[in-house]
Structure formats: C-alpha cells, structure tokens
Amino acid sequence: MNGNTIQILIAMIIYMAAVIAIGILFAKKANKNSENYFLGGRSLGPWVTAMSAEASDMSGWLLMGLPGVAYWCGLADAAWTAIGLAIGTYLNWLIVSKRLRRYSIRANNAITLPDFFSNRFREKKKLILTVSALFILIFFTVYAASCLVTCGKLFSTLFFGGEHYQLMLILGALFVLLYTILGGFLAESASDFMQSIVMIVALSVVVIIGLVHAGGIGAVIDNAQSIPGFLEFFGLASPSLNEAGEQLVAGGEPVFGEAAKYSFLSICSCMAWGLGYFGMPQVLLRFMAIRKESELKMSRRIAMVWVIISLGVAVFIGIMGRQLFPVEHLTKSGAENIFITLSTSYLPPIIAGFVMAGILAATISSSDSYLLIAASAVSKNIFHGVAKKNATDKQVMLLTRITLVVITLVAIVIAWKEDSVIFNIVSFAWSGFGATFGPLMLFSLFWKRTTRAGAIAGMISGGGMVFLWKLGISQLGGVFAIYELLPAFIFSSIVIVVVSLLTKAPSKEIEEDFEAVKNGVEGVE
Image (tube, rainbow, N blue to C red):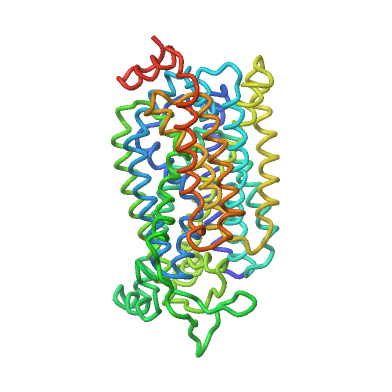
C-alpha cells in the first residue's frame, strides 16, 4: 500500500474504533435483559429515532447502489425510485408511527414485529409469530448479504485495486458481527445516529468537490444532455455492450444506443419502492422504541429533511460521475464504485478516508439492524415464543449470538460472487418485506375486521408472490417485468380482505383493543 492508501486506512480505523467504543459503552445496559437488547427499553429520543431509522434503512445502497444506477443508465430509474422512497418515508411516519407505537404497548408490550402481530390477534397457537419470524429470517439474511457486498467492494477497491474481494468480504462481515454482538439495539441506534451524520456529510463533500472539478452544475447538465435519454424523466439511456457485458468505448468516450422509452408502468414500478416502508422491520422498530409518542412529529420532520437531501445528492453524484469519469466503470456492477472513485480521486487521502467511512457507516448501520432483527426472530420469537416458552433471558441471549454467527455465514455465501449488484440484492429483499408485512401492518392498524386467518394468508401470499413474480412471471417481459413489490403488495392486500371476510370476525377483546388504540389509549386497562 502507498502513502495515500495508508492515510485512508488510518482514517477508517479511527472511525471503526469509535463505532466499537459505542458498542462497548452500551454493552452493559443492552445485555441487562432481552427487552433492552432488542428494543432499547423504549428510550430513544426524537433525533436518534429519526436518524437511526433512516440510516439503517438506506445502507450502502444509498452511497453505492443508487449513484451506480444513475451513472449507468441516467436519471429516470434512480430519480423515480428516490421519489417513491421519499413519499413512502413520509406516509410511514405520518400514518403508521403513532398508532404502531401505541398498539405495540397495548399488544402485551411487544418488542419485535412478530410479537406485535401475534399479540395483536391474541393468538394462542403462535402461527403468525412463527411465519413472520421465518420470513424475517429469510429476507434479512438476503439484506445482510447486500451490506457485505458493499464491504467487499469498498475494501477491495480501496486497498487492492479490485482484487481480493472475498477476503475483504469476510473481514467486513467479522467486524459487523463483532459490533452487533457487543451492544444490541441501543448501541445500534446510537451509532446509527452518528453514522447518519457521517453519511450525509460524505455525500455533501463529494458532490461539492466534484462540481468544482466538473466546472459547475451547468457543465454536468450539458454532458448529461448529450447522452440520449440520460437526463430524462421519461426516457432511459442504453449503454452499448459487448458480449462480456462491458460498455463499448470509442475515441475515449462511452458508447450509448438510442434512448429507451420510459413508460408509465416503469414509473409505477420504481415508485412502488415506497410501499416497502410499511413492512420494513428496522424502521417500524424505531416507531415502537421512541420514548414518547408525542415526539414522533419532530422525528418525522427530521427524517424527511435527511431523506430528501441524501437521496437527491446520491442521484446527482451518479449523473456527475458520468462526466468526470466517463469510461472508468464499464459494467453495471462496477458502476456502483463511482462514489469511491470520486472520493479517492479528488479529496486529500485522510479526508477521503473519512468519506469512505461514510460508506462503511451506511453498511454497518443497516447490517447490524438486519442481523439483530433476524436473530431476534429465531431466539425471541421462535425459540422463546414457540419452542421453549420457559426459556431464561440468558438462554435467549446465547441463542441470539449463535444465530447471528449462522446468519452472517449464510449472508457471506450469498454475497460471495464478485459481480454481485447491490441494487438488485436490496430490491429483492425490500420487496419481500414490503409485500409480506406492509399490507398486514396497514390492515392490522386500520381495519378492525382483519382476522388472524387473514393475517396469515396475507403474509404467505405476499411473500410467496415476491418469489413467484421475481423468478417466474417477470421472465415473460413486457407488463410482467414490473417490480415484484407492486403486484405482490396488491395481491397480499386482496387476500387479507377476502380471507378476513370469509372467516369468523375477531373476538370482542381484539375489537376492544383496536378501539382503545384508535382512541389513543396505551396499554391494557
């Protein structure tokens, strides 16, 4: 490694040391009992709630995946996805957060999402709990894999010129695993707050310095407009590829074909990302963990400012990167490194190191959430909730740590291929959660007639349709190529309504719980 690389490494080590210190600081309180470990004792303030929710949600996808999409094919896909996410974020905070915070307390002080669904329907045979926990385990393992891909790409690109991806993947996984085991939800939320600041500062620094080198925003726009479909909301740039899937280069410039049409269906497909928020456990848990329901309004405002700025800047970085480094990244997977290229090319090494820590921040803030929630699904929900109801807190915590190791190993296997595309992995896991839990969350909170049978059928049909559509129906192309979240979300909603209406109405106690929450009552009277 040369001197510049060593400086970058030093900056990142300083950052990682700070993250570990937070884990150690909160370890004692977090390990006091499982409620503290998994939900922080419902003690989060409005700033930590908002910033940690968004940081854990966005992950390395924000700094690598989204700019990569904009760099590769232009504005449309990235911008419509960002718009959908911003709208989904706002609606989730506006209509779900307060009622879920209140209802989770009413539902026997539920501390995980499967707990909430199971207690909401007062089930004795824990089928809802088991099904929801299994889906969380499946999709969060895939989600964790996307974070590990980010770690592998980041470290291999920075320190080995793109070589030794698998080794860097393993080292990144070990670091994330160690941190998650140490501090649990409190450490995760506190560090996510810090990491959300690092992420938005990193994005801002890179876009400012990039604009200086690009010659201003006018030069960036002129270059983007010269590429067919690149700067259009209703068109899409089409990189010309060789047989190996690499973009062709002629005269030192990237070759593009004619702009592709961008249909209304494509817009719906991208904006459907916003539906995912209603079923995203790492965000929903923050609603449950805030110390006061009244503070959610402030959290919503903080979250929206962060989301709009970060998404907008991330998309612009991809557009700007195409002017500054037009032939640096010739594959769709490689395009996700444009943020790294900009940072290491234009910033002093020590500053670049801290900016690179922004990517690491995004990755850690998400992967620790994913690992922790997936582990809680096994240890708290399946083991303690179903298999061994008299399990001690010590046994639950031990199984949690064992589960964290196993999930990490599986995520490493999923992320092992060097050409993995972060955006694609995230989109699948996102659709899985959105379709499995999103409709059920909305109906559980706002439709009294929802039944236990409807809840189970809705989860299974939503999660199953994601697999069916992604792996089967979408291969037909045309209208069927739409993002799988949208049809799966609609299908799950229909199933919940139909099955609920065909089955016996909820008990009087369940309806009383619903009315109490609707009228602003917390807890059981």
